[in-house]
Image (cartoon, rainbow, N blue to C red; front, side, top):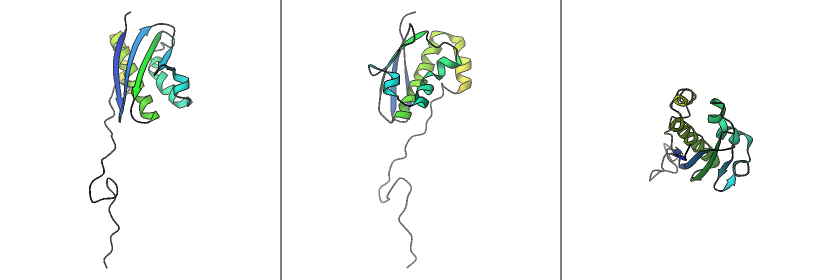
Length: 128
C-alpha cells in the first residue's frame, strides 16, 4: 500500500495526515502522539477509528496539525484518520459513518458584534 493522505477539520483546527502500512506509529508534528496529547481521553479519541475497525497497529500515521485548541485538534485528527481509512478500503466507510467520524462538525465560535460586549451579550437594561 502506498501513502494515503487526507484532511480533517474541527472548529479552527486543520489536520493533514499521511497514512501508510506499518507497525502502528503515530507521529503528530514530528512528536509521538502520547507526548503531544498527554490526556488519556484525547489519545482514545485519536485511536477510535482504528478501534472501530479493529485495525490497531496496522498503519503508520504522520500528522501535521495546526490551529485551535487541543480538543479541536484531536477531533480533526480523528476525522482525517477516518477519511483516510475509507480511501484504503471502501467497506470501512459503513462502520465509520455509523459512529459519526466522517461528519464535519460545523459549529464555530460566533463573532463579536460591534456595540456589544460579546457575541450576544448586551449591556444591562435600566428603565431610569
